[in-house]
Length: 97
Ligand SMILES: [Zn+2]
Image (cartoon, rainbow, N blue to C red; front, side):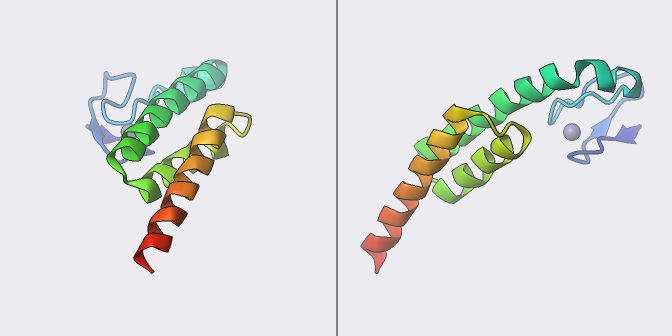
């Protein structure tokens, strides 16, 4: 067994992808397919951010959308949703004060 360098999940020696976060753990193909995989993981993260957003977990949503934006700064969906989550969070804290 070895562990995923990103999330620390245990992965089998024959596994090509981490079953937890989905990154490739086969070192040889990293360079060639990195952009496509980054995009796919970005989509998965974006969907996770939407789940947080819909659950009302806006701080988690913001964090998730920011991670998407760090890896894919041109992602307008993530940028818009990050902004919306910030507004929701600001509205919530205004209500509490
Ligand atoms: Zn992982």
